[in-house]
Image (cartoon, rainbow, N blue to C red):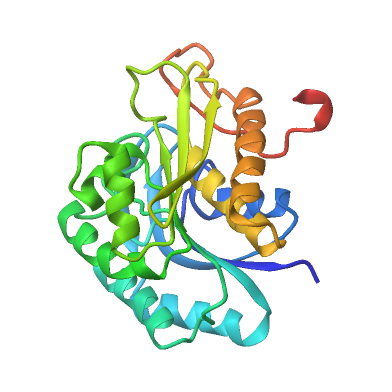
Length: 267
């Protein structure tokens, strides 16, 4: 069968982010997405109103059922929602329930793109620091990178996280709105190995971070080396954002939903 990616992520009723974004992005990368649902959120395409996290025991049971049944070739985590869920995932790696050679893409979600709370940031950061050493790649936005590293300079922050055990960090300037084009830097073991410039498109996008991380995980499952997976994701995410759906076309400030099924003729 297609290579399998196990995604830990929450349900977004709008379909823009969360587990739906993971399923679509992993599929577009050529792999098969499986899901351990971590939370049920109350949100639309513009705002998070609340959420209820799944118990860590329930999330673990979902994950181990998949791991026992299917040949999981990559792991991706997005919204985990509680320190218990982060600790549970950490234990899966520490106890080698997840094999050492399975790549793990960690999207350390602290807040939604709309600014809505997805858990207490301080306690989530503390818990995430225990999970970081198991990550093949982390894909934080600028806020998350600064929170996790304690550094304002993004490059120093990435190097610091690598020194703490994370194999690689993808630095994204998409949330630094004063800058021009979006710059991305891939650090592996503290060294910058790839830099790319992406056009800053007009508008805000709901689920772009989920989509990017999941596509990379899908490409890693397909056998890509990390740099090639990131390059492929850069090209794909740009296409999805250019073709994004506008649920509120009369509101220029409303978030857009990436079109993860854009066809070649529409790129």
